[in-house]
Length: 381
Image (tube, rainbow, N blue to C red; front, side, top):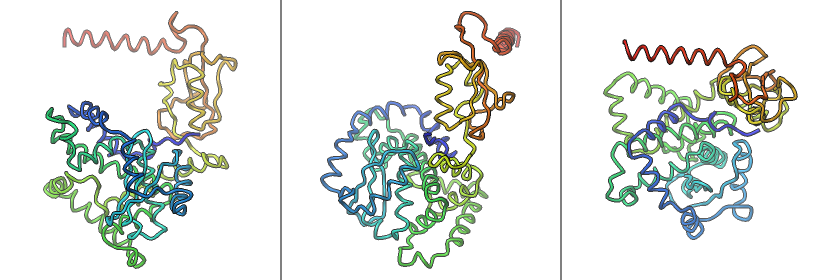
């Protein structure tokens, strides 16, 4: 049963990426970067300058990746240590992404918070952020014009949109860390530490006061258009959101019903010891006219076990004509349904192109009526 990374995506992450892709020049810019991005070159830099961690090199840190990657359903990436006094961690690459942590991070955070940072970086991999993150990081480092050349593809709107999406993507990666840690407190403490509270003082930190500070900040900004404009100017060139806001987002998401459901889903996926609700991979309408074998695979991979097919001997290439939860109710994509719920797939084996499909007459008539209505509207409206 695969883990669906879309469950972790923060709404602002989705919206910002959609807006970024809609900006003229985005696809050309990505193609330009793809022409020069070479993971082999990145690996040469890491292998020659950084310390590769593994079973024979600082295994205590490297082994932290195993349970994290198991929970998120990703391969264990390469992990490197970089000599840099700035506490940081980042993920680069595309087909074979890797993680780098800095010596400053190990000096700043207590050992018990390192797993949360690694889970955050693995969250970027699970959410498939790494390609655009790599491009965005080069842009933020001022290498954009070198890549795009005189064509001027790197416009100001693209720069601002890339930075905004990168900030929003951090919320999704934070959710991965909250999920892997079983709650928000580790990520809240990481955010607290990044404000300047080192590990010697972190035990004395008042985390609740930090969250209250974040809530006050949110009220201050949301209550004034001018403050909102100032915030935009402050963050327009930054690739990470404010630490207090991240901490508050982690707390709020961990208190949501979505977090509880995903926790149950993860336990079921890893142990199959208890039942749980699972989001539907497709709506009942989207299943129509798919092959039985394709629909069965999608729902089985999602974790559903109560599927029924009518007729029971329908061939794998038989077409689905209707799908009903409990035999009587339609459902939407993303609806949370008990994993063992009875989902009835009605199939037909005839070639659907030869004659009207069973159960489709109503929709065909409806589509025809809509077309006629639109035609008359355009002629006489």
